[in-house]
Amino acid sequence: MKVIQYAKNSVAAAVIVNCLVLLPLSTANAQQTEIEKALRKLDAEWSAAASAKNVDKTVSYYSNDAVVLPPNAPLASTPMAIRAQWKKDIDSMIGGGWKPTRVEVAKSGDMAYVSGTYTFNFKDAGGKTVEDRGKYLEVWERQADGSWKCGADAWNSDLPAAP
Image 1 (tube, rainbow, N blue to C red):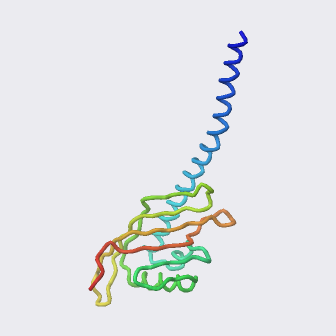
Image 2 (tube, rainbow, N blue to C red):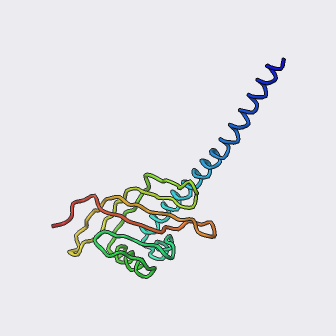
């Protein structure tokens, strides 16, 4: 009888220990899934703002200390430089957008990266319509108020460089 009671207690203890170990993992996974959904939504809204040529809305997704690494241009590390870069890009843009293909959330839940692909049509210096397609990488940071802002943004073309 003591053996049966000991076995029952051991099984119960093992179940409790497993629950205590696995519960935080399932909670963390649920939190990461919610963050991923939120970032995919934010990224879609951000792409729509750029496609609509809304410079103010487009730059509103960046944190105050963000850095932007555009192709064939200097690093933009101030809000004014980031706005100037986007204004230049949006002024020549005809249409397009980007779409995330991967979102990875840090275990801490306060940082994540989003990567994906983009396609944009724009007018070159000669007025010719050009299609550019490529990939991007964004680093998102949770702000003190719980919102998410992009702290680093880089993109580059899949097309060969013009001679």
